[in-house]
Image (cartoon, rainbow, N blue to C red; front, top):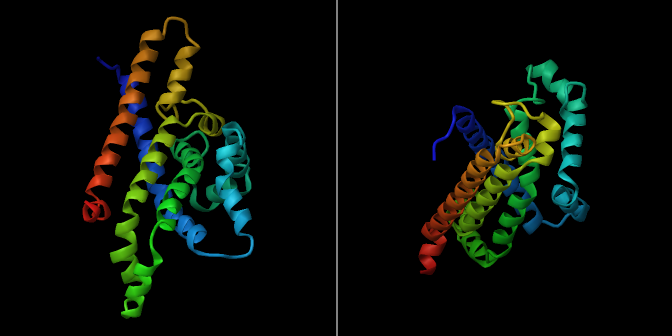
Length: 230
């Protein structure tokens, strides 16, 4: 199966956006998952609902909200442009933001499940031995929730790879800049006779997603927590 330079461009851009999305979301997702799993505070249900909002509202609405907030005339977008000379709209960086917003709740949910399954008595025992919280997190908590973190990263990557509605609304469909795999497939559907190209991109999407899941499964099996279990 030979690919044209334009198709390679679409694939490399999609991978770049998905990888950046996971990188941008990793620490904030872990922090939010820990907060929701371990802490009780006023307004927790509101925070929880806000985090999961992108899962239930139409992606186009999310893209429009991003457009209003982060566009050049938006409150955040105009500040970013005037202070840092950063423009997100119609750029691949904006595509990363759209994908990150859509995949954030899935990553938080997966990590929270792993944190809630962690037995707190292990951490309490280490605390009684005088270990610092950072040491306990690094040597006990993190290795035990590593499978959940890997699963969250896989979910985030797959969601970013398939993101369409928020991306096309926020950063449009620009070849070489914001045209990711789903947007390229949508563009080809509008052109008569593009079935062969569509089939190639669909197969590539399936192969990349399959490879991501297989790699995730391998990493989970190799993680310290699973190794100890076996």
